[in-house]
Length: 320
Ligand code: DGY
Figure 1 (cartoon, rainbow, N blue to C red):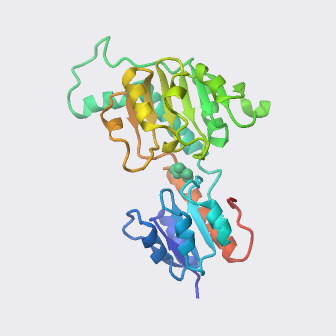
Figure 2: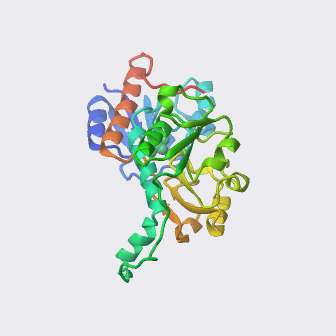
Figure 3: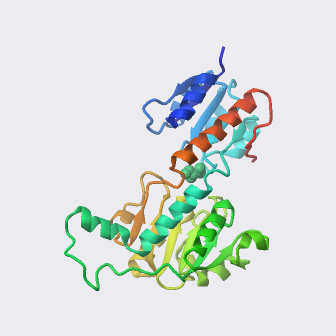
């Protein structure tokens, strides 16, 4: 008999095929978000559960999780939707998918940077609504990216990949990270030992830090006031790292010239004002959404489950 695997969202076809070959799969066919009780019902009698970004894998979930479940593998690198301490208390193994989202997410950060700086949403809307009146010298004037200063908070794999791409745009890169990188990984970027020291150098600021107790709500009005006036904010990390009310006020006041956002607090129910502001360039959490990356993520998630159910160490464990 095959072990039972509960899966909370539809997965790429090749990953579902592998799961079906090795497991007795129970999947959320409708692919709508499931609440805690629906995930627990799916997990009844399962050996493993494969969850995704946004699933409520909190302390109450672990309290009610059937004893048959040995591992919760998440189809994500982020684990902010999982209460890791509650998992550890219950002895449930947690695995994630690090290292395979780097280029896809860095590319999206660059799409946001260029889109926000060059007013791409407004331009595209004119084309789609047939309201473009033709070329004119003062039409939709944006901000040049080339040669500007880019600040990065969080110089892990994705932050570094964003910084490497910035070299192609002759940007001066500044960064804050809990630890300074070695010179070969810095690629000439300037390290600042505090966020306060970094912010005045950020004509563009790209966030690449996880959502933690320390970073939640970090981008608030006092943070934004330390940026050069008219800076451009890019977020591909997690929505709750920014205070939406303060970012929206800064976009209205010109403290921020624009924002490019791929992630939002309370996704998919984003702060509605973002939609009506002309100076936002918005994407629905597409950072990792390439065929290559999603297949690699699924491969890692199933590798974690295979190893755990075979009694081995999981290749990508997450500790509390
Ligand atoms: C992750 O894996 O945490 C990403 O946010 C998904 O794009």
